[in-house]
Image (cartoon, rainbow, N blue to C red; front, top):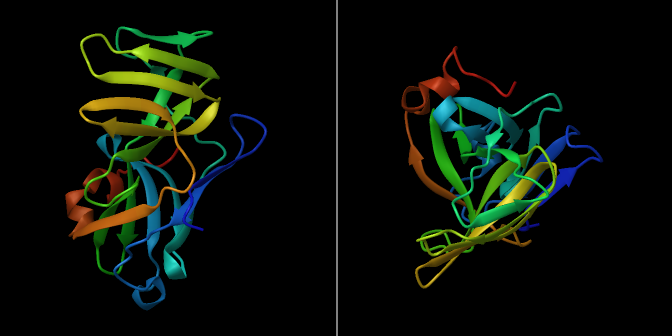
Length: 199
């Protein structure tokens, strides 16, 4: 179960979850007590979804049915076109593994390698289906991306100084970074009483 999966209902506002397995988990979740995986937008201090980490590093993050991301026009770079029209999007910035009893977090990445990735995935919400194609003027970045209405796994592939943004391929593992603590002090907007939450 190393593959990432996006479970989506029939509508854009249906229940959504992402699931996977952390390949390099440095501890046993059962030995650590309750350990959570959080889908966040750290800049906004927003918790988008969460789930419990289980043995063997397995997890499923659930996003509440009623979460309406604060979407904005995608504003892709000049040279990139969206059809039939430009979507309004929202990007989940970061996945975190949170150990409340230890007050620490680990950044969680979905990529083909923990230190030197050439393929990396982020989660993007789109308010409508769209086909995004073209090359950014003056940059070595090209888009070949199909978005559906709702959450999408979007992958950036780097090759010899050029980048391609497209839909994620199945099977990319998740990797946990070094521990950061104290989590509640490092990320007060996320863990403090004024946290925005997922709604």
